[in-house]
Image (cartoon, rainbow, N blue to C red; front, side):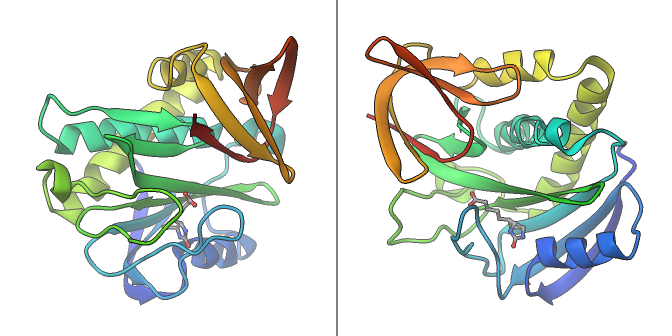
Length: 236
Ligand code: BTN
């Protein structure tokens, strides 16, 4: 069993904003905010996150005692936990795939997103999982658990996710990033896949060359190896 303490809200602006507020008040490690809907859900970069009732919106606050640079690894830890959750709720033949830095895809559609923020020594991990609803008209395709024959219970998704997250966080605390990196690489595009990365206003096309020891994306572009630390990736 996980050791999280969950506070539930019927409606909230953003569970990440609430967690940030609680972090500033000194909320303990393991605090979780769960909301049925968000009125101001936030995505990565400047995106909003579509948050009607029927999906899972959750933020976990951790105080790992590790420096912020290490805490960034938690976005990969979380992506593995979300991928396991998705697979536990879908028919056995359907797999979840990971896309750098922390998207979880099913059949090419984004089913979940992760927004990691650091507030002093607290790490705030926001997770949105599309159970019933996916936004339309985006630059990418989004999908849901239900569209793939999955289980439609938000509460069971929450319980499984917290259980998987606790297990992966324990593994990371005990053994560091290497086993997480290895598991993450096993669930993303193959090494050598042609991808495009948009970073710092520039687009780079190249061959996927793996993850650096700190989670940066490695891209081989015409004889040069680039490290991408922030940005978006698509398969060419
Ligand atoms: C992404 O852009 O892929 C990240 C999306 C993160 C959405 C979740 S939903 C719960 C938490 N609260 C927010 O406002 N955002 C995150």
